[in-house]
Length: 183
Image 1 (tube, rainbow, N blue to C red):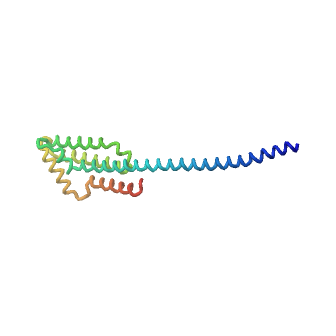
Image 2 (cartoon, rainbow, N blue to C red):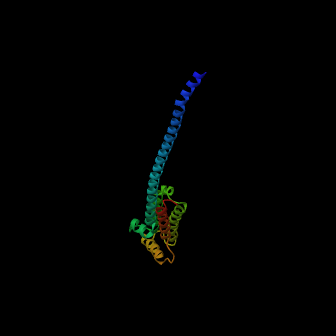
Image 3 (cartoon, helix red, strand yellow):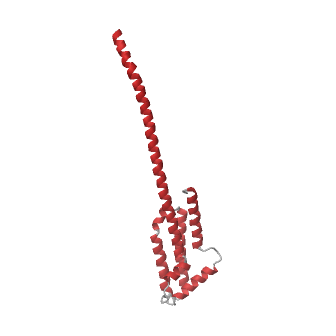
């Protein structure tokens, strides 16, 4: 029995320290791997945030460009042809605004609901203004009359124009996104 106990103690003398070293090694390696995984996840997250921020800023740029392009002061000189009638110019305005809007539909993914609703409302207001003003004129009259009437209304407007308000809302949100990284 003495021999068995001695052998058992000899075995325990080597296995207990080995088990302690194994447990400590396992714990250290596990902590190291977990921290490495966390670092990689953080790096991936930061990279995706940078990409997302760039996409959001591009969306704001595109929406600013859209609002500028549908501003009657910019739109009408771009599409007006001297041979157009009031009806032709009104249709060209509506078609161009809708085409510009459809070209920028995907931008709603990257901006807040408030900005997107503002952009949609401005589009509708500009279309409705062109239709409303053209209805007060003879459809077969020269398009120059519609052009002049729209510009007169814009110049005489006491309140801020819808496009100017939309630009302000987009710019404000864009500045918040750039300063905070998100909304």
